[in-house]
Amino acid sequence: MKLTHVTIHNFRGILDASMNLHSYGLLVGANNAGKSTIIDGIRAFYEKDGFKFKKDCDFPFKGAADQESWVELTFALSDQEHDSLKDEYKTANKDLKVRKYFQTSERLHDGKNATGSIVGYKSDDTLSKEPFYGAKNVQSGKFGDLIYIPAISKVDEHTKLSGPSALRDLITNIMSDVVEKSEAYKALTESVTTFAGSVRSVETEDNRSLSNFENDLNELLAPWQTNFNLKFTTPSTAEIIKSMLGWDIRDNYHEKSQGVEYFGSGFQRHFIYSLIQLGAKYVPQKTSKKAKDFTPSLNLVLFEEPEAFLHPPQQDDLARSLIKVSETEDWQIVCSTHSAHFVSRNAIRIPAIIRAQRINGIVSTFQVGQDQWDDIIDANKAIEKVADKYSKVKKNMQADDLKPEMEAVKYFLWLNPDRAGLFFAQKVLLVEGPSETALINRLLDDSKLVIPQGTYVLDCLGKYNIHRFMSLLSALGVTHAVLHDDDENKNEHQELNQLISDSKHDHFTNAIVTIQKDLETALNVTPPGSPHRKPQHLLYCYAANQIADDKLKNFCDLVQSCFTVQKGKP
Image (cartoon, rainbow, N blue to C red; front, side, top):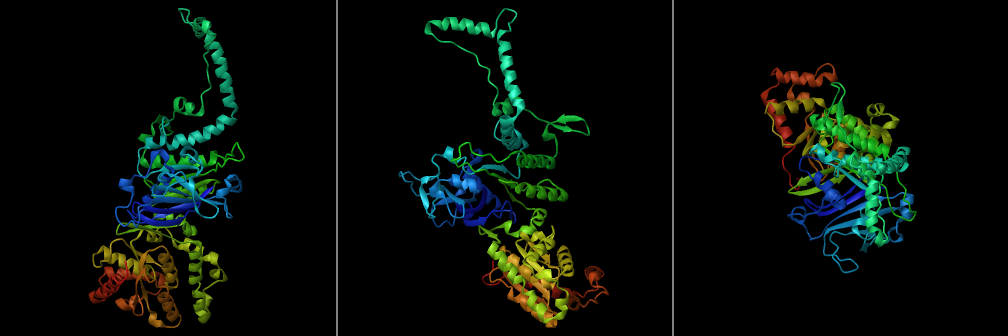
């Protein structure tokens, strides 16, 4: 079973949000964008470890159109899981859609208020009036298991064995299978039996023994025709973990064991992730003991800021490992992240990225659905029409450039950890190449240029790709502006300039501003002999005061005009 869709209604800053989930998904966005709100909405559905909806703080303070609050989850079922599902919930596409009411005026079939209940969608796509599979304790096993790892917490919250924790849950899952199948456990059972037989007859120095205790007590109970018997039972999995199991971490360099709290935060986060990784490896799918039971298998991991305390190479390694875990059957990973490294590792799967954004207290979500992804690919192929008209452009293109799969490859190559910063920006300024990016950033550093806070300057690797990034940013709800050379509208540039103009989004494209001819001409800078030297040459001229102040001011005015507030723009 996999969670494929989430719909949230009136939960904190979310009035209405709907998103698709994949085996490995990312929630991205700026600080306070609403990523944790989405995760907490899912947690409130499961109520794992006592996390529940609280009306005073979880119902929206403003903006709600009604007093209803609920979360809907849609699951894709395996053939076996679907076959065991009650007939009233079966659908042609073998999915299961359920709603949990946090607050509602709706009533169940027996007249009771539905608040706190989970109800399922029936085969005709109407909501049932009966709680899904009855009581809550029955429902709790019908949607898999939730593993939640917050961004900041004490390591003991995840590793204690005496109470609920990620470590205990994962060890319990592993130990349950070990106990059921292990010869060692059979040997333990036999040893307990042998021990019980032997210890009964062992006497203390004053001739007391368990056997004598039983005999003496039974003499007193004889008139009642009853017997008292002491029993030694083999400890259960839970008892073994709680009372017999302990752990520590050995520092192999210093040859000493010590508590995990003495290691750094980065190691502690890695330790928690390692438990998840091993859980995916050691917890196989379990089949129901009763063929007709609906007992789906899913381990849903909600991981907040997995990059915390890790340096960039470790972030890359962790991202790859999480993706690998998510490919395991019945495992699913959802991460909220501020890390461009995590996003760049997932750039080949752009539809699995969900961007959250908060404006005036209201959280919205943006995602490139499959249909929208197809539209982006079709729009991006408009460059083919330009190539057909100009042999110079055609010469630089390969047959593979026109294949839909190549668009995904291109985004993966382009969205490195630097450019992936666009997913976290409040606004994005798209420019042609590294020359504009370098100069604008230098002017910002020197306080000669002021643009809105949270703006990311994106090097589009040339004019040919600007329309591609415009399509992606519009789909993800990112407000953006474009600054590019007009190249005097000569030859193919007339078509390219028009393509950029046609890619403008009515809501998310703030402005498209052109530099007359090119950047070097606008700044009255002599171009270097080789194109690849343009950025360093331009910065050298700036540092050496070889660019006139009026030229720099005109350029700064152009950049700032990209962010002039326009009517209807955010």
